[in-house]
Length: 113
Length: 110
Image 1 (cartoon, one colour):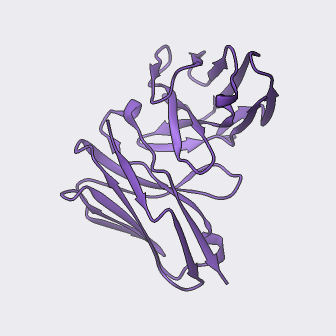
Image 2 (spheres, each protein chain N blue to C red):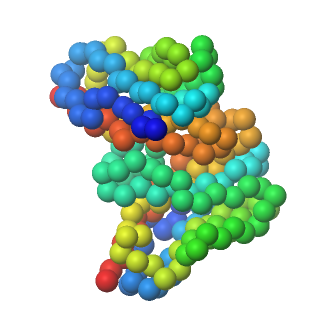
């Protein structure tokens, strides 16, 4: 089955710094690559996603890059703010294979003022 | 729209008791899911339903049953709760590939 790994598991940055979280996966059939943000005690929410025919996507301070050959994709957050503090999950998804959906274990990001 | 709703928010059970977690969505989505989230871990898929009348096992189905009552509702049943089922349970529905999660049910089994 799919093997999904996120690195690092925890990340601590100063406000204004950049943060990068990497997700590696094993299923070559994956073609949808989302990142979810979960604040403490809240539900996960989609923040950005990318499809396999695109290499990079940006939305204001966040971006996702995909290297399908190497089977990894990364979340980039620039000019971090305290409200970016949360746990971030990747969930590489194979086409039509929602019963095979595997979430990464999560990266806890702490942004210090 | 309320989105995805779950009841109850919190529940404490004794080992061997049964209960049903309720989930409903008002977004007319076809697909619905049940996940569990244990401390320090990601979400693990228990069951999913691609459409009304169909259900399929996910990664960790043992000890659970589900019912897709209609397009709106997808319930999760624990027939004989065990301490290993202590977790936070999230229901989700899908529009395209995007998952929309409910607020979660925090379940403790003593």
